[in-house]
Length: 291
Image 1 (tube, rainbow, N blue to C red):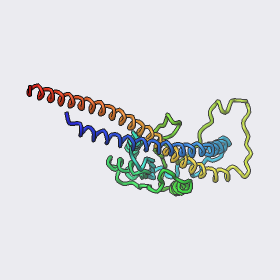
Image 2: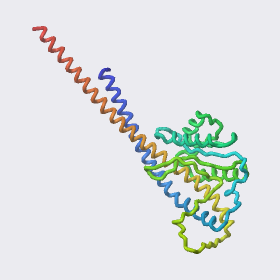
Image 3: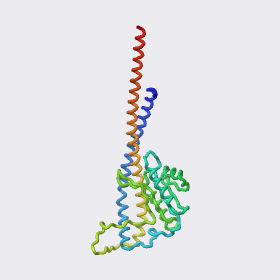
Image 4: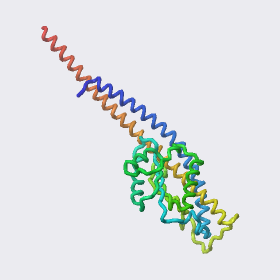
């Protein structure tokens, strides 16, 4: 059953763990608020570019554009997996890496390229047998638009040159604080979302757009900007989702440590009571023997 001294040590250890997990929960909450602000702030820009590209598509512009078509279908595919550099964030890394493994194993061809953001994802994919990959370890949890822009520009250049046939991003998409979903997004060839019937009700008249400068010139500028904006939004969503997962995991760890401390304290009190009862019994027995 152990002695009271051992239980006392376990109680101290559990209380220390509780203080650490509570501190990590508070840090994750602070980072989540900052990351959520950045993610929500970048969405209007991304949605506006999507809307402009959709209008150009409705006007019949963009057919044969190098970013909207596949220049070389026989070229290898490229997959970018966005994970975390650190653990202690619940099932976040496991969910992302399982989706990435499923996607990679469904690909056709042996020369497909893999790029990973986050050490946890790299370790998991390496353990799963995907050892030929490029690790991006310089983004951290505060990626700047300039860094993401360079990454996306490299993808655009390689795609147009025919070095890769497509670019897909596996990441955790952020919808709200209570909902995140692992998503495989096709970045290239780029495709603008089609307008729904509710957004474009039938009026009997066809929309006619006038563009200045001409539509082709606008598309040449908007498409690269849209690819970069979508990539940046993926990173922002992944970071917010990571902080949410860590916040939830640390809260659960803090609550479990509190329950464990309560159980140990109750066990300690029972053992201490039993020891006191035993000592009283021995004292009484000794006194009775002297009479």
